[in-house]
Image (cartoon, rainbow, N blue to C red; front, side):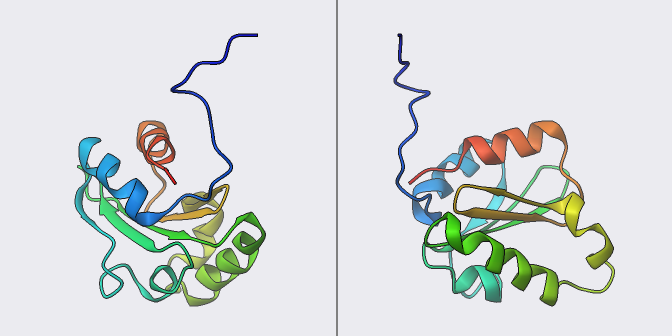
Length: 122
């Protein structure tokens, strides 16, 4: 069996600080992990929060939970505190990957989603 080094995944949780540089490299702007700028829920996530904007203005917020067992409660918190206009679309704009909960302003394009998930790092 062949194992590729780049594709190997670790079991370490993703973190905001480990992921942020990749978002900048992928063309996201206004990338920040500053708790004062990432929003309330992401600011209190155990492994940090991140906020970034795509080239077409789609705002992405990520809460990096302690581990995948905390994802459901973080998703529930995002749903409970979402603006009324976003609540009906939460299934379209919220994703999770291991311990990361991603929330977009509008449904991401397949490329935006692929870039974001590819940037998640421990």
